[in-house]
Image 1 (cartoon, rainbow, N blue to C red):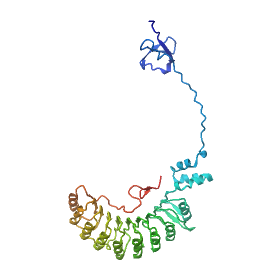
Image 2: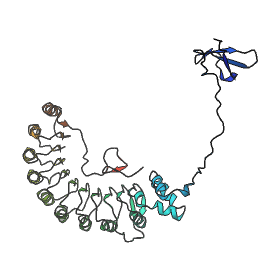
Image 3: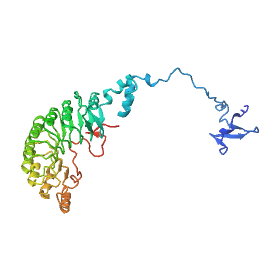
Image 4: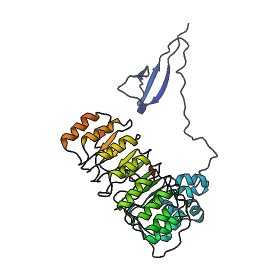
Amino acid sequence: MASIKRKYTTIAQSGIDYENPILNGKKVVKSKRKGILKIDHPSRWPGDVSNTFQHHISKTKPKTNSRQLNFCELPDEIILTILNYLNKATIVAFGQTCRRYRAIGYHSILWRRVDMSYKHVDCEQLNSLLQRGTTTLKMYQTTVENMNFTYIEPCFLSHLDLTSSIISNELLVNLLNSCTSLRKLSLESIPLNYEIVEKVVCNEQLDTLDLAMCTGLTFECCQLLTSKLSLLRYLNISWTELSCESVQHLCETMPRCIEQLNISGQRYNLTDDNIQSLARRALRLRVLDISDAVLLTDQSIISLRLHSRLLTHLSASRCYLLTSSALITLKLLPAFSTLDIFGTLGQIQLQQLHNEFGTRIHLNNFPFSNIARPTTGIQRTSIWGLRTRL
């Protein structure tokens, strides 16, 4: 059989690695012509011509009939999806471009959750925002000016955080009057009166209410809260300077569906009889904070152990009359898991409690209560678990 001649392929010198004489199993052979190398493609068997032909790659791009779209040619749905990833200031600037973009930028889906913390706004701006379909509004330390006081039209708010806001009573009444479907509300550190509470209880489906450090809560206000808000599950009424009659009425008429209650700070007004009435009525109670009640004794612990069988977390910090022998009995509750008693017992008694509880019950893990509060821990951009800021 005639011998098969070796086939060669000429390649550019720049494409060869001189230090590697073998490329992909092919032997490099130097040519006599300057600047040209040859690669020897040895046939693996007679008649093998798999490496004989060169492959030419076309450098011209294939022609297509597609045309790039401008942003203004995009459908409204696509633009709305893009705007949903932008912050509110950018959306406002976008809406000032033309009438079409203004209509898209004012769509309710873009304004459902808004964070206006640390800002200065007037009543007209607040009213304009609420008419865009806002349902979750955070106004932490927001100053609301009522220089041009106007009527606030009905809105769709369901979550409202007014913690430490600076707002007049007249404007607050007007704002609450426009809300008829609130489910979670925080008025922490705001002066209250009977008219404001009367507007609050109009939202009968309210299940979370934060009134911590509020002033102006009278006995009549407490009567409204317990008689109208029958679906209330989370209530924070700590450090509100309630009278003895108000505390007694709250404990005796607390909504039966209450699950978390913070009634701390009632130093000389919360007694063992109040805790006994509360434990007998609120059978679904799971988290209770009675800190800084200096008149409470071991009888309160006994009442909770007998009636609050679902109790999981108790805070009794700075209740100086409680003893370790009574607190140890809390381990008999089947679901009990956390006890906070900062400043109540000495170090030796705390160590005894720790030994008795073992690993099932945690001791002194939470120095501050989070009951009904909109913002907890480091989640500064959310209220009640709903994100309000990008």
